[in-house]
Image (tube, rainbow, N blue to C red):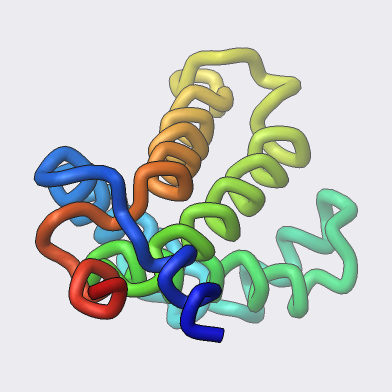
Length: 144
């Protein structure tokens, strides 16, 4: 069990991952808060769930809960640097679903509700899944 914990908390990065994960985590937390709590002009679980159902992601409420939780709690994990590798994988998967269920048919650019922003978050999340949390993180403390 100790080897497993060391594997998921180890980090091969210094300050670069720390600098990447904090703003990405804050952005993802804000998006999750929109879905879960209706913060920052979001629609909350009920409204987001209705929208998700309307685009074929059923059951909509559960999908909104899963996406919002992945974004909010995954983003929180990035900010504090706790379990960054598994959080990065969960967030990358969430962004992959967002790209192909919502944005891909609109092309690359955000001006057309395209996938460039979700792709950027996917790549940042994957990068953190591979590199780990970085120098200033709870994971770094745990892995010692």
